[in-house]
Length: 461
Image (cartoon, rainbow, N blue to C red; front, side, top):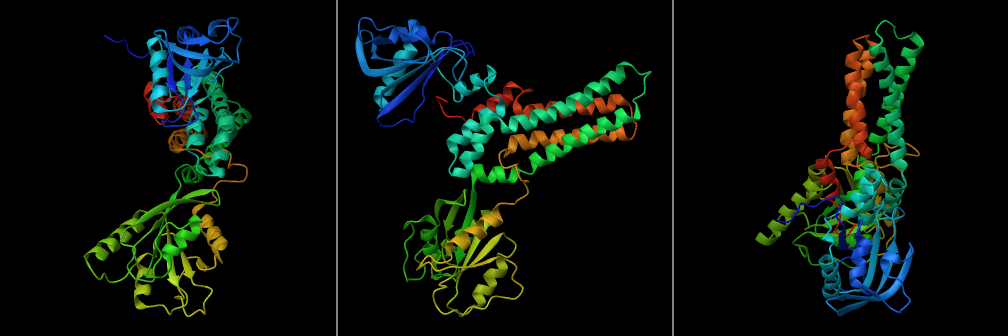
Protein backbone atom coordinates (compact mmCIF):
# COMPACT_ATOMS: atom_id res chain seq x y z
CA UNK A 1 0.00 0.00 0.00
CA UNK A 2 1.46 3.36 -1.08
CA UNK A 3 2.10 5.87 1.72
CA UNK A 4 0.25 9.16 1.71
CA UNK A 5 2.18 12.15 0.30
CA UNK A 6 4.26 13.91 2.92
CA UNK A 7 5.84 17.37 3.13
CA UNK A 8 9.11 15.54 3.89
CA UNK A 9 9.17 13.58 0.62
CA UNK A 10 11.61 14.48 -2.13
CA UNK A 11 9.45 15.67 -5.00
CA UNK A 12 9.98 16.13 -8.73
CA UNK A 13 8.06 17.51 -11.69
CA UNK A 14 8.53 19.03 -15.12
CA UNK A 15 8.49 22.79 -14.53
CA UNK A 16 8.07 23.89 -18.15
CA UNK A 17 4.84 23.56 -20.19
CA UNK A 18 4.33 20.24 -21.92
CA UNK A 19 5.01 20.34 -25.65
CA UNK A 20 7.84 20.58 -28.11
CA UNK A 21 10.49 23.19 -27.42
CA UNK A 22 14.18 23.87 -27.21
CA UNK A 23 14.50 22.70 -23.61
CA UNK A 24 12.42 21.27 -20.80
CA UNK A 25 13.30 21.92 -17.16
CA UNK A 26 12.72 19.30 -14.47
CA UNK A 27 12.85 20.30 -10.82
CA UNK A 28 13.70 18.09 -7.82
CA UNK A 29 13.36 19.33 -4.23
CA UNK A 30 13.82 17.71 -0.84
CA UNK A 31 16.36 16.22 1.52
CA UNK A 32 17.22 13.44 -0.96
CA UNK A 33 17.32 15.62 -4.08
CA UNK A 34 21.10 15.34 -4.47
CA UNK A 35 21.08 11.59 -3.77
CA UNK A 36 18.40 11.09 -6.42
CA UNK A 37 20.42 13.18 -8.87
CA UNK A 38 23.51 11.04 -8.17
CA UNK A 39 21.60 7.96 -9.37
CA UNK A 40 20.46 9.40 -12.70
CA UNK A 41 23.20 11.87 -13.66
CA UNK A 42 26.54 10.90 -15.17
CA UNK A 43 28.88 13.92 -15.25
CA UNK A 44 31.08 14.37 -18.29
CA UNK A 45 34.81 14.10 -17.57
CA UNK A 46 36.63 11.94 -15.07
CA UNK A 47 37.28 14.81 -12.66
CA UNK A 48 33.73 16.21 -12.75
CA UNK A 49 31.91 16.09 -9.37
CA UNK A 50 28.75 14.17 -8.69
CA UNK A 51 25.73 16.32 -7.70
CA UNK A 52 26.08 15.38 -4.02
CA UNK A 53 29.67 16.69 -3.90
CA UNK A 54 29.20 19.71 -6.16
CA UNK A 55 29.20 23.25 -4.81
CA UNK A 56 25.91 25.10 -4.50
CA UNK A 57 24.64 27.21 -7.39
CA UNK A 58 26.80 25.49 -9.99
CA UNK A 59 25.87 24.03 -13.37
CA UNK A 60 27.22 20.72 -14.68
CA UNK A 61 27.23 19.05 -18.07
CA UNK A 62 26.51 15.35 -18.45
CA UNK A 63 23.89 12.73 -19.29
CA UNK A 64 20.77 11.30 -17.70
CA UNK A 65 20.92 7.51 -17.63
CA UNK A 66 18.58 4.73 -16.58
CA UNK A 67 19.54 1.08 -16.28
CA UNK A 68 22.86 1.85 -18.00
CA UNK A 69 21.15 3.49 -20.99
CA UNK A 70 21.66 7.14 -21.92
CA UNK A 71 18.41 9.06 -22.15
CA UNK A 72 19.59 12.60 -22.89
CA UNK A 73 22.39 15.13 -22.82
CA UNK A 74 21.63 17.69 -20.10
CA UNK A 75 22.75 20.55 -17.91
CA UNK A 76 22.22 19.96 -14.20
CA UNK A 77 22.08 22.79 -11.65
CA UNK A 78 22.84 22.15 -7.98
CA UNK A 79 21.14 24.47 -5.46
CA UNK A 80 21.76 23.73 -1.80
CA UNK A 81 19.46 24.70 1.07
CA UNK A 82 18.60 27.21 2.32
CA UNK A 83 19.36 29.45 -0.68
CA UNK A 84 16.69 27.93 -2.90
CA UNK A 85 13.05 28.64 -3.76
CA UNK A 86 11.80 25.93 -1.38
CA UNK A 87 14.62 26.33 1.17
CA UNK A 88 15.38 22.65 0.51
CA UNK A 89 18.15 21.05 -1.52
CA UNK A 90 17.10 21.50 -5.13
CA UNK A 91 18.29 20.12 -8.46
CA UNK A 92 17.15 21.44 -11.84
CA UNK A 93 17.75 19.41 -14.98
CA UNK A 94 17.61 21.13 -18.37
CA UNK A 95 17.05 18.49 -21.03
CA UNK A 96 15.96 18.67 -24.65
CA UNK A 97 12.34 19.72 -25.07
CA UNK A 98 9.62 17.33 -26.14
CA UNK A 99 6.86 15.48 -24.34
CA UNK A 100 8.35 12.00 -24.72
CA UNK A 101 11.96 12.85 -23.81
CA UNK A 102 11.08 15.04 -20.81
CA UNK A 103 8.78 12.30 -19.53
CA UNK A 104 11.57 9.72 -19.85
CA UNK A 105 13.88 11.90 -17.74
CA UNK A 106 11.13 12.42 -15.16
CA UNK A 107 10.42 8.68 -15.01
CA UNK A 108 14.10 8.03 -14.34
CA UNK A 109 14.06 10.54 -11.45
CA UNK A 110 10.90 9.01 -10.00
CA UNK A 111 12.40 5.52 -10.25
CA UNK A 112 15.42 6.79 -8.30
CA UNK A 113 13.26 7.64 -5.28
CA UNK A 114 11.52 10.97 -5.86
CA UNK A 115 7.75 11.39 -5.75
CA UNK A 116 5.75 13.22 -8.42
CA UNK A 117 4.94 16.66 -7.05
CA UNK A 118 1.37 17.79 -6.64
CA UNK A 119 0.19 21.05 -8.30
CA UNK A 120 1.75 23.99 -6.48
CA UNK A 121 3.75 21.80 -4.11
CA UNK A 122 7.07 23.57 -4.70
CA UNK A 123 5.51 26.94 -3.85
CA UNK A 124 3.63 25.39 -0.94
CA UNK A 125 6.96 24.23 0.50
CA UNK A 126 8.39 27.71 0.03
CA UNK A 127 5.48 28.96 2.17
CA UNK A 128 5.72 26.20 4.79
CA UNK A 129 9.48 26.72 5.08
CA UNK A 130 9.06 30.45 5.69
CA UNK A 131 10.54 31.77 2.47
CA UNK A 132 7.34 33.51 1.40
CA UNK A 133 3.97 34.19 2.98
CA UNK A 134 0.59 33.26 1.53
CA UNK A 135 0.05 36.55 -0.34
CA UNK A 136 3.43 36.14 -2.02
CA UNK A 137 2.59 32.56 -2.95
CA UNK A 138 -0.62 33.77 -4.59
CA UNK A 139 1.38 36.46 -6.40
CA UNK A 140 3.35 33.69 -8.14
CA UNK A 141 0.11 32.49 -9.75
CA UNK A 142 -0.93 36.06 -10.60
CA UNK A 143 2.43 36.65 -12.26
CA UNK A 144 2.14 33.48 -14.34
CA UNK A 145 -1.40 34.34 -15.44
CA UNK A 146 -0.80 38.08 -15.98
CA UNK A 147 -2.03 39.19 -19.39
CA UNK A 148 -1.01 42.86 -19.28
CA UNK A 149 1.93 44.92 -18.07
CA UNK A 150 -0.20 46.46 -15.31
CA UNK A 151 -1.29 43.03 -14.05
CA UNK A 152 2.30 41.80 -14.07
CA UNK A 153 3.51 44.91 -12.21
CA UNK A 154 0.83 44.47 -9.53
CA UNK A 155 1.81 40.80 -9.10
CA UNK A 156 5.48 41.75 -8.80
CA UNK A 157 4.67 44.28 -6.07
CA UNK A 158 2.70 41.66 -4.14
CA UNK A 159 5.50 39.13 -4.61
CA UNK A 160 7.97 41.66 -3.20
CA UNK A 161 5.90 41.87 0.00
CA UNK A 162 4.01 45.16 -0.41
CA UNK A 163 0.68 43.65 0.67
CA UNK A 164 2.33 41.60 3.42
CA UNK A 165 3.79 44.71 5.05
CA UNK A 166 0.41 46.46 5.14
CA UNK A 167 -1.36 43.41 6.57
CA UNK A 168 1.29 42.86 9.23
CA UNK A 169 0.98 46.49 10.28
CA UNK A 170 -2.77 45.94 10.71
CA UNK A 171 -2.16 42.81 12.77
CA UNK A 172 0.27 44.68 15.00
CA UNK A 173 -2.34 47.35 15.79
CA UNK A 174 -4.87 44.65 16.67
CA UNK A 175 -2.35 42.58 18.62
CA UNK A 176 -1.16 45.53 20.71
CA UNK A 177 -4.76 46.50 21.51
CA UNK A 178 -5.69 42.93 22.43
CA UNK A 179 -2.63 42.64 24.71
CA UNK A 180 -3.68 45.77 26.64
CA UNK A 181 -7.27 44.55 26.93
CA UNK A 182 -6.22 41.12 28.21
CA UNK A 183 -3.79 42.68 30.66
CA UNK A 184 -6.65 44.64 32.21
CA UNK A 185 -8.78 41.49 32.28
CA UNK A 186 -6.00 39.77 34.28
CA UNK A 187 -5.84 42.74 36.69
CA UNK A 188 -9.49 43.81 37.11
CA UNK A 189 -8.77 46.08 40.08
CA UNK A 190 -7.04 48.56 37.78
CA UNK A 191 -9.34 50.56 35.50
CA UNK A 192 -8.15 51.60 32.06
CA UNK A 193 -6.86 55.16 32.29
CA UNK A 194 -8.71 57.66 30.03
CA UNK A 195 -5.64 58.37 27.90
CA UNK A 196 -4.93 54.63 27.49
CA UNK A 197 -8.58 54.04 26.56
CA UNK A 198 -8.27 56.73 23.89
CA UNK A 199 -5.05 55.20 22.56
CA UNK A 200 -6.69 51.77 22.25
CA UNK A 201 -9.60 53.23 20.29
CA UNK A 202 -7.18 55.16 18.08
CA UNK A 203 -5.32 51.93 17.32
CA UNK A 204 -8.55 50.24 16.30
CA UNK A 205 -9.50 53.23 14.15
CA UNK A 206 -6.16 52.99 12.35
CA UNK A 207 -6.68 49.27 11.82
CA UNK A 208 -10.16 49.84 10.39
CA UNK A 209 -8.87 52.57 8.09
CA UNK A 210 -6.13 50.25 6.86
CA UNK A 211 -8.64 47.49 6.19
CA UNK A 212 -10.92 49.92 4.34
CA UNK A 213 -8.03 51.03 2.14
CA UNK A 214 -7.23 47.43 1.23
CA UNK A 215 -10.87 46.52 0.65
CA UNK A 216 -11.15 49.47 -1.73
CA UNK A 217 -8.68 47.75 -4.06
CA UNK A 218 -10.77 44.57 -4.43
CA UNK A 219 -12.58 45.61 -7.62
CA UNK A 220 -9.38 46.71 -9.34
CA UNK A 221 -7.76 43.45 -8.23
CA UNK A 222 -10.55 41.43 -9.86
CA UNK A 223 -10.26 43.46 -13.05
CA UNK A 224 -6.49 42.98 -13.31
CA UNK A 225 -6.59 39.26 -12.57
CA UNK A 226 -9.70 38.23 -14.49
CA UNK A 227 -10.26 41.08 -16.92
CA UNK A 228 -13.74 42.14 -18.01
CA UNK A 229 -16.17 41.04 -20.71
CA UNK A 230 -17.33 43.74 -23.13
CA UNK A 231 -20.15 42.97 -25.58
CA UNK A 232 -20.17 44.90 -28.85
CA UNK A 233 -23.82 45.50 -29.84
CA UNK A 234 -25.61 47.37 -32.59
CA UNK A 235 -27.67 47.09 -35.75
CA UNK A 236 -26.27 45.18 -38.77
CA UNK A 237 -23.56 47.09 -40.65
CA UNK A 238 -23.07 49.63 -37.86
CA UNK A 239 -19.41 48.56 -37.77
CA UNK A 240 -19.27 46.09 -34.86
CA UNK A 241 -16.90 43.62 -36.54
CA UNK A 242 -14.76 46.46 -37.89
CA UNK A 243 -14.53 47.91 -34.37
CA UNK A 244 -13.46 44.53 -32.96
CA UNK A 245 -10.72 44.25 -35.60
CA UNK A 246 -9.51 47.78 -34.83
CA UNK A 247 -9.41 47.18 -31.06
CA UNK A 248 -7.51 43.92 -31.56
CA UNK A 249 -5.11 45.41 -34.09
CA UNK A 250 -5.72 42.61 -36.61
CA UNK A 251 -8.56 41.14 -38.67
CA UNK A 252 -10.44 38.63 -36.55
CA UNK A 253 -14.06 39.07 -37.62
CA UNK A 254 -15.38 38.93 -41.17
CA UNK A 255 -16.43 42.37 -42.39
CA UNK A 256 -19.07 42.43 -45.13
CA UNK A 257 -21.67 44.90 -46.46
CA UNK A 258 -24.18 42.02 -46.41
CA UNK A 259 -26.45 42.34 -43.39
CA UNK A 260 -26.55 39.42 -40.97
CA UNK A 261 -23.02 38.15 -41.72
CA UNK A 262 -22.31 37.59 -38.00
CA UNK A 263 -24.57 34.77 -36.78
CA UNK A 264 -22.66 33.77 -33.65
CA UNK A 265 -20.56 35.51 -31.01
CA UNK A 266 -16.81 35.92 -31.48
CA UNK A 267 -14.55 36.45 -28.43
CA UNK A 268 -11.03 37.87 -28.37
CA UNK A 269 -8.93 39.52 -25.64
CA UNK A 270 -7.15 42.86 -25.99
CA UNK A 271 -5.02 44.98 -23.64
CA UNK A 272 -6.86 48.25 -23.02
CA UNK A 273 -4.77 50.63 -20.93
CA UNK A 274 -3.33 47.72 -18.96
CA UNK A 275 -6.69 45.97 -18.45
CA UNK A 276 -7.44 42.63 -20.15
CA UNK A 277 -10.75 43.08 -21.96
CA UNK A 278 -12.56 40.17 -23.61
CA UNK A 279 -14.44 41.74 -26.53
CA UNK A 280 -17.48 39.84 -27.80
CA UNK A 281 -18.62 40.59 -31.34
CA UNK A 282 -22.31 39.79 -31.64
CA UNK A 283 -25.00 39.34 -34.28
CA UNK A 284 -26.66 42.55 -35.46
CA UNK A 285 -29.74 43.69 -33.56
CA UNK A 286 -32.81 43.79 -35.81
CA UNK A 287 -35.96 41.80 -36.59
CA UNK A 288 -34.57 38.36 -37.52
CA UNK A 289 -34.94 37.28 -41.16
CA UNK A 290 -34.59 33.55 -40.47
CA UNK A 291 -34.19 30.97 -37.70
CA UNK A 292 -30.39 31.16 -37.71
CA UNK A 293 -30.34 34.94 -37.36
CA UNK A 294 -32.96 34.71 -34.62
CA UNK A 295 -30.67 32.39 -32.67
CA UNK A 296 -27.77 34.77 -33.24
CA UNK A 297 -29.77 37.69 -31.82
CA UNK A 298 -30.80 35.54 -28.83
CA UNK A 299 -27.10 34.91 -28.18
CA UNK A 300 -26.42 38.63 -28.50
CA UNK A 301 -28.87 39.38 -25.71
CA UNK A 302 -27.39 36.56 -23.61
CA UNK A 303 -23.87 37.97 -24.12
CA UNK A 304 -25.07 41.44 -23.13
CA UNK A 305 -26.68 40.14 -19.92
CA UNK A 306 -23.40 38.51 -18.84
CA UNK A 307 -21.09 41.35 -19.91
CA UNK A 308 -19.65 43.92 -17.51
CA UNK A 309 -19.51 46.54 -20.25
CA UNK A 310 -21.50 47.27 -23.42
CA UNK A 311 -20.10 48.98 -26.50
CA UNK A 312 -23.26 50.05 -28.33
CA UNK A 313 -22.23 50.86 -31.91
CA UNK A 314 -24.35 53.28 -33.95
CA UNK A 315 -23.88 54.47 -37.52
CA UNK A 316 -23.30 58.22 -37.11
CA UNK A 317 -23.84 58.81 -40.85
CA UNK A 318 -27.51 57.78 -40.61
CA UNK A 319 -30.44 59.15 -38.62
CA UNK A 320 -31.40 57.30 -35.46
CA UNK A 321 -34.14 54.73 -36.13
CA UNK A 322 -36.97 53.57 -33.89
CA UNK A 323 -35.13 50.24 -33.63
CA UNK A 324 -32.02 52.08 -32.41
CA UNK A 325 -34.07 53.95 -29.81
CA UNK A 326 -35.60 50.70 -28.61
CA UNK A 327 -32.22 49.05 -28.15
CA UNK A 328 -30.78 52.15 -26.47
CA UNK A 329 -33.55 51.85 -23.91
CA UNK A 330 -33.24 48.06 -23.58
CA UNK A 331 -29.59 48.23 -22.51
CA UNK A 332 -29.73 51.53 -20.62
CA UNK A 333 -29.30 49.86 -17.22
CA UNK A 334 -25.88 48.40 -18.08
CA UNK A 335 -22.46 50.12 -17.97
CA UNK A 336 -21.86 51.13 -21.57
CA UNK A 337 -20.18 53.42 -24.04
CA UNK A 338 -22.11 54.68 -27.05
CA UNK A 339 -19.76 54.33 -30.02
CA UNK A 340 -20.63 56.59 -32.97
CA UNK A 341 -18.92 54.89 -35.90
CA UNK A 342 -18.23 56.39 -39.35
CA UNK A 343 -17.23 59.70 -37.81
CA UNK A 344 -15.29 60.38 -41.04
CA UNK A 345 -18.62 60.78 -42.90
CA UNK A 346 -21.12 63.64 -42.59
CA UNK A 347 -23.05 63.15 -39.35
CA UNK A 348 -26.78 62.54 -39.48
CA UNK A 349 -27.47 60.96 -36.11
CA UNK A 350 -29.26 62.72 -33.27
CA UNK A 351 -28.98 61.12 -29.85
CA UNK A 352 -31.76 61.32 -27.23
CA UNK A 353 -31.37 64.25 -24.85
CA UNK A 354 -31.80 62.03 -21.80
CA UNK A 355 -28.88 59.75 -22.72
CA UNK A 356 -26.42 59.56 -19.82
CA UNK A 357 -23.89 57.05 -21.19
CA UNK A 358 -20.48 58.36 -22.34
CA UNK A 359 -20.20 58.82 -26.12
CA UNK A 360 -17.10 58.24 -28.28
CA UNK A 361 -16.92 59.08 -31.96
CA UNK A 362 -14.69 56.78 -34.02
CA UNK A 363 -13.94 55.88 -37.58
CA UNK A 364 -13.22 52.20 -38.07
CA UNK A 365 -12.16 53.06 -41.61
CA UNK A 366 -9.35 55.42 -40.54
CA UNK A 367 -8.81 54.51 -36.87
CA UNK A 368 -9.64 58.02 -35.70
CA UNK A 369 -11.08 58.25 -32.18
CA UNK A 370 -9.93 54.81 -31.03
CA UNK A 371 -7.67 56.20 -28.30
CA UNK A 372 -10.54 58.28 -26.93
CA UNK A 373 -12.72 55.16 -26.91
CA UNK A 374 -10.03 53.25 -25.00
CA UNK A 375 -9.90 56.07 -22.44
CA UNK A 376 -13.68 55.86 -22.03
CA UNK A 377 -13.51 52.09 -21.53
CA UNK A 378 -10.74 52.45 -18.94
CA UNK A 379 -12.63 55.18 -17.09
CA UNK A 380 -15.79 53.07 -16.84
CA UNK A 381 -14.01 49.88 -15.82
CA UNK A 382 -11.47 51.30 -13.39
CA UNK A 383 -13.52 52.43 -10.42
CA UNK A 384 -10.88 54.70 -8.93
CA UNK A 385 -11.93 53.63 -5.42
CA UNK A 386 -8.38 52.72 -4.50
CA UNK A 387 -6.49 55.72 -3.22
CA UNK A 388 -3.13 56.99 -4.38
CA UNK A 389 -0.31 54.64 -3.50
CA UNK A 390 -2.64 51.64 -3.12
CA UNK A 391 -2.30 50.19 -6.63
CA UNK A 392 0.61 48.03 -5.49
CA UNK A 393 -1.59 45.95 -3.19
CA UNK A 394 -4.58 44.75 -5.23
CA UNK A 395 -6.32 42.20 -2.99
CA UNK A 396 -8.06 39.09 -4.28
CA UNK A 397 -11.37 37.47 -3.31
CA UNK A 398 -9.81 35.44 -0.48
CA UNK A 399 -8.16 38.52 0.99
CA UNK A 400 -11.42 40.46 0.65
CA UNK A 401 -13.40 37.84 2.56
CA UNK A 402 -10.85 37.68 5.39
CA UNK A 403 -10.54 41.46 5.65
CA UNK A 404 -14.31 41.95 5.71
CA UNK A 405 -14.59 39.51 8.59
CA UNK A 406 -11.70 41.28 10.32
CA UNK A 407 -13.30 44.68 9.75
CA UNK A 408 -16.65 43.55 11.21
CA UNK A 409 -15.02 42.01 14.29
CA UNK A 410 -12.89 45.13 14.82
CA UNK A 411 -16.06 47.26 14.68
CA UNK A 412 -17.67 45.12 17.36
CA UNK A 413 -14.57 45.22 19.56
CA UNK A 414 -14.29 48.99 19.20
CA UNK A 415 -17.97 49.44 19.99
CA UNK A 416 -17.62 47.31 23.13
CA UNK A 417 -14.74 49.51 24.34
CA UNK A 418 -16.60 52.74 23.56
CA UNK A 419 -19.72 51.61 25.44
CA UNK A 420 -17.77 50.35 28.45
CA UNK A 421 -18.98 46.78 28.06
CA UNK A 422 -17.19 43.85 29.68
CA UNK A 423 -13.60 43.69 28.44
CA UNK A 424 -14.04 39.96 27.79
CA UNK A 425 -16.50 40.82 25.00
CA UNK A 426 -14.03 43.19 23.33
CA UNK A 427 -11.27 40.60 23.66
CA UNK A 428 -13.36 37.91 21.92
CA UNK A 429 -13.97 40.15 18.90
CA UNK A 430 -10.37 41.32 18.74
CA UNK A 431 -9.20 37.70 18.68
CA UNK A 432 -11.61 37.02 15.80
CA UNK A 433 -10.27 40.07 13.96
CA UNK A 434 -6.68 39.01 14.56
CA UNK A 435 -7.45 35.51 13.27
CA UNK A 436 -9.16 36.83 10.12
CA UNK A 437 -6.44 39.33 9.22
CA UNK A 438 -3.79 36.68 9.87
CA UNK A 439 -5.43 34.46 7.26
CA UNK A 440 -4.43 36.94 4.55
CA UNK A 441 -0.71 36.32 4.95
CA UNK A 442 -1.06 32.75 6.20
CA UNK A 443 -0.09 33.37 9.82
CA UNK A 444 -3.32 31.61 10.76
CA UNK A 445 -4.17 28.83 8.31
CA UNK A 446 -5.76 25.43 7.94
CA UNK A 447 -4.82 22.60 5.61
CA UNK A 448 -8.12 23.11 3.78
CA UNK A 449 -7.24 26.75 3.12
CA UNK A 450 -3.80 25.82 1.81
CA UNK A 451 -5.31 23.12 -0.42
CA UNK A 452 -7.64 25.71 -1.97
CA UNK A 453 -4.87 28.26 -2.54
CA UNK A 454 -2.32 25.89 -4.05
CA UNK A 455 -4.85 24.02 -6.20
CA UNK A 456 -4.68 27.06 -8.51
CA UNK A 457 -1.02 26.31 -9.35
CA UNK A 458 0.27 24.33 -12.30
CA UNK A 459 2.34 21.16 -11.89
CA UNK A 460 6.02 21.91 -11.31
CA UNK A 461 5.51 25.32 -9.65
